[in-house]
Image 1: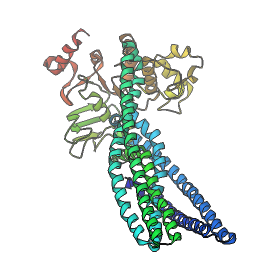
Image 2: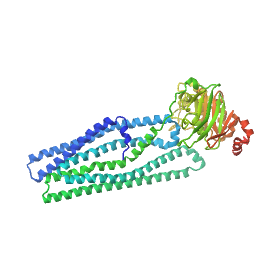
Image 3: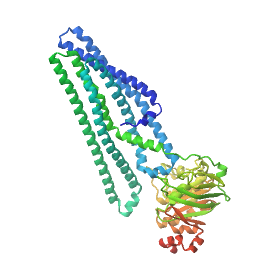
Image 4: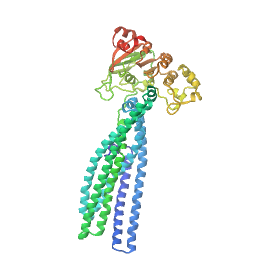
Length: 580
């Protein structure tokens, strides 16, 4: 019913001690409020003097006011802790995502990660605020009231004691059903988020292919499924609330019947009978509040579980085994991979198997293979975004220094990564180009722009280099985005390793031809890994890795592979490469 890991969150112990004290005071204020209300009604029934009735009325009003003040104080105590905890969790989540790299986003889905970091955190705040207070209310208030009721009349108190766990058991059964429904609801919500993000990213392509309306129908189907799941969860929540109200009302009615019979028979006085009848609803109120808020916080619990799952994801260790001097790439440097394996989820299921090759100096290495063969996975492995499964996953060495993985900070300061769709930040064009080198001057930026073939385009911009681009600002075409990424590479001459992950995959042939002439000069004096399924790039490569099903099935120079009449030749033939 409650994620016990919240009791391991920072600052929880001190906060719980204060909260327990406030709830205990509230329990006694509820008790005395009921006692003095009962005393007031009894005195009125007995037609006591007004002066005798006045004090119970004032005490009742005082404890009623104290009860409300304590409720506000509990929220005042919890709110700063919940806000700070959510702030810390969000910071830790973002830091973890940066530390793990793109693999966690690829695994979870962009929509889910965004939902988790934004709406999910707000739901966690609500969850922390409500569930901890309600748990303490349910533990302390009924206990204090029950002890007092035993001294008044043990028969009714015993009945209340027995019926309480029965109601809890029934609520647990319905709670598990609601939890399973909420889990599926949260999963459908993240699926909806992922579909929506994918639709926004691919909207230009969908429009060009005339598939935007069909994909809109897909989003409608996913959103309709989400709506049905939400309604299913609400159905169980309403059912459990009705059942709880029914059982608690019935229990109070049973107590009232026995008290009435006792009054008629003269076995019980009016004051204790009224006190028991007034306190009985207060006895059940914490569990009713908890049940209502439990259903309201299920999404927060699921969001907290998802966040903690990411935070508990192991981060590569030993990231500083290489010094900057050892990792600095020169014409004499060497990178060697021997029998390296990698799997995304399960150690026994590998995406890359027995990868072995050597890269020397300023080689230009092409990585080719059919879609889904593992090209992007290998690029991510070379960039340190992914790490081998375990210590027996192979051997990696840089300039003779053996490392367990390439998530080495010194190594990652040596390369530039250019994916299919470079990310452009919501910032000026100049800031986007200076992404790797924020201290670069305007002259260097202008030279990089000229080298990337962006001079004419920049001249058409009203604000020039100060034009804002990226999310929520001026849009750029795919070819322009790639040229901006190349300008970053031209600007930073200290990084001698280039990782290209199918940079022209989504460009038309005319744009690609123009971009190719811009990219080729960047290759000079760099170690280049170029993953592609466009075989005309192979003429620019010194060495090729042919990948099929996560394995390097052939490797060598283009001329040597062409003479073997093997996988490389078959791939060129299949994709019409002989004509290029």
